[in-house]
Image 1 (cartoon, rainbow, N blue to C red):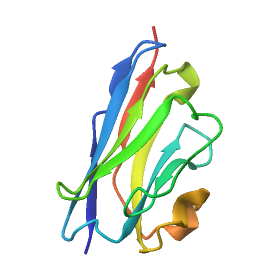
Image 2: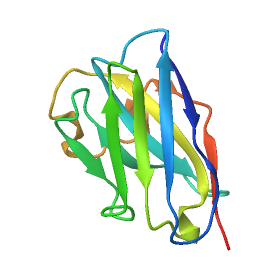
Image 3: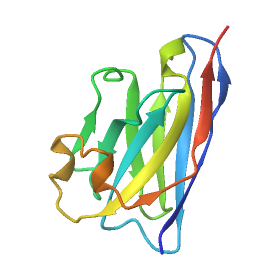
Image 4: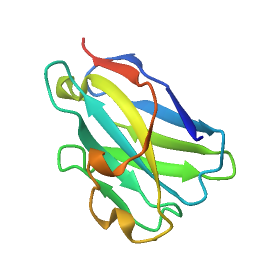
Length: 129
């Protein structure tokens, strides 16, 4: 059973940066697409980024394009979300999720939370001065 653990959240000022990590155990990430999601209080969980198993395709929500970058190191079983130019509206609990799918083109569009099978517990990101 694949297990995911997020880390790297915290308090950052507007305009600042954070890098979130999603570490996998119980298996490899070699054939898993990975998504990053966030959920703010009283809001729906939204997908912000997706990476195919080989990072051949990447996609981002419009709200984070040009500011967030997803990357992965399958050998280390870690997926990253680099977040720059953070805004107060980026504040949320951030989750990573995985779905087994070896198709390189899978993340040409965001998948939606219903596609993912494995979820982490989340890490809090607060953006405030």
